[in-house]
Image (cartoon, rainbow, N blue to C red):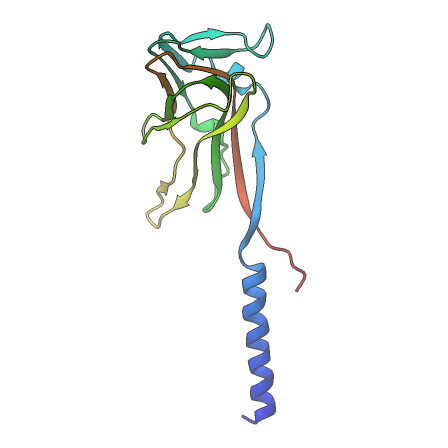
Length: 181
C-alpha cells in the first residue's frame, strides 16, 4: 500500500471513530410522562393506608391525595406493570416521582428495594420528588433486569408530616445523537 492510500485510510478511520464518539452515544431520552392526576386513577384500589395515613383531597375538591402523619403511619401504592407501558426496549429508562410537601423526616421508596430517608422541601411548596428510577436491560435468556418496583411505601414514625398530591411515571427511549456527520 502506498503512503497516500495509507494516509487516506488513517483519516477515514479517525473520522469514523470521531463520528461514532459524537453520534453513537445517547443524546437524551424520548420521554413519555403519565397524565396529571395519576394518583386519582391508581388509588384508592391500589393504595393502602395504616396508622395516621389518610386519603384526602389536596389539589382540588375532587382529587385524591394522601397525608401521612403526624404520628406513626404508612401509605403503600401498588404500581401495575401496565403503568410503565408495553413496548420496552433494552436501555429504556423509567422513573417514579411524587408531587409532595411536608415537614420532617419521611422514609420512602420501593417496597421491594432499599428505602431511602428524605426530608420534603417545605411545608408550603409542593415539588416533584424522584422516588425510584432504573433502566431496563434484556439478558440473553430473554429475561429483564432493572424492572420498576411493584409498589412504593412512605412511612412517618414521629411528628413529621408528608402530603402526597400526585404521582408521575416517566418512561423514555435513548436518543442517539443526530449530528449530521
